[in-house]
Image (cartoon, rainbow, N blue to C red; front, top):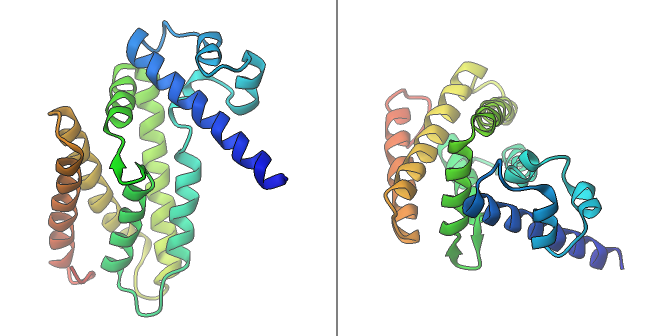
Length: 205
């Protein structure tokens, strides 16, 4: 029974997030009210506040959960797994978690990116989340590769790889690429970043 309740909560949370992003894209972030988001998701305003504290929280609704998943993957480093292999596995998991079945949700990804880039407060929060997540990943890598990697090296590796993939993804979405082209852009960015890291001798590309 508790599993059923949890699935229902997840569906409601997702419905609110989908409704919010859709309305933000159609009407604008500032112009959309919480009451309108709740109505679009067919729930009450009170229910909205049971899941989110503000409109801003809806945009980043999945950030914390995904971060915890990635940190857990790093902490559970496989025996003999290299830094390159672990980083690629973490990035691949991040990509797969954005997919619905086998189809990359381009519409949502592009709409969310457009909303964030058009609202200064969302840009600022997005940057804070990005830097915080990268530092947490760097710290987790230090723990996973104790004695092999220090914090500066780990931060450089994470920043190089995550930065390359994120920017390549944004560029691909901006020019209107297909889902397959977005994946290809991510792959190219990963390969280029790993090649550069490999030249340092700290990572096997």
